[in-house]
Length: 188
Length: 228
Image 1 (cartoon, rainbow over the protein chains, first blue to last red):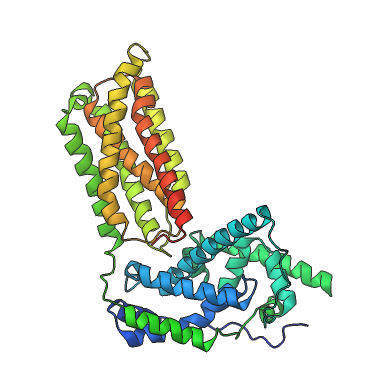
Image 2: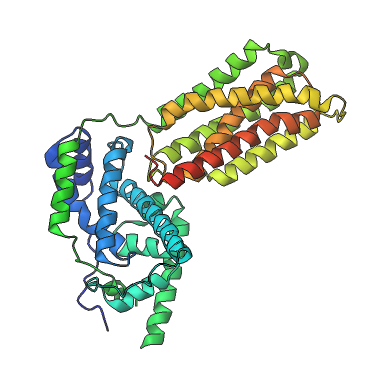
């Protein structure tokens, strides 16, 4: 089976610690800022990478994400969970980028520019099969699955980050699993 | 089977170290202390305060004629419904201001329910359907309702802009309807005309117009690509 190199997701940061770092960052503690970026960038990067065309785009999204976090940092309230707050903003960054890219692509088609070159980006390290399967899922199911399985968020956290009920998150995850299972079954 | 699927998900593909270093340096050097937003209860109370103060002040400026024209039960039902809706809108807006906040109220269901409830109340409570002077008496009401909506919209924005909109169009639509509800409340305090068509078109019209302005503003915010 492909993907045996990958391990089950672990939550990258423990509850409480990261919220304390965020509170310190709000008080302009430079060490807290560095610790936050170092600890939170990998899971957020995974979230973007699984939905991007290449690493460069995912790193671009990551930078945009931190810029937004910096601007919106006053909207995090100490005592509240940080992960739903972060992922709600990460979703927004992704949606804005998608809209911008879509508009740019439409512009390119209209003005009949040179045909797109074959991608020269290094291949992503994720198993191609799973990344293709993820791309085939509807947007809402894909992001729910990524938050649960790649970022290690709880159902409650995903519900808050996506602004839907826990029941709806469960339903989306179930449908996504069913869809992946069918594809896996068909491919074997 | 789920375990088999779990193992397939991409893990351990970290971002470039130089990128992380660049971001953390940028954040560490530009950080200034910020005051976190107050609790939901405070945000809710401030929003409701704006609603009450603006509707009372604007309606008082043009006299509170409506209070004398309504019976006690009508006052209780009409003002009670408007106040209940204002409380729900204020709560929904509070949820929309904070990323990752638990959503108790669905904003689309809320504004549709609010419009339907007000329309039903106006249709059944005011039995008069006369259309004489319909436009002549309606335009001043629509204008006053929109003035109330505009003032509350501008005042509320000072509070609202401190938040971060993860769904700008949805939030601004809700914000527009909330401002429009201030217009409805202003007219409910001022206008003594007990005509259902007049209230449905000109009073509720202020709320619909404000909601439409909200959508347009939301689309504008969304097109800018950063809702902070």
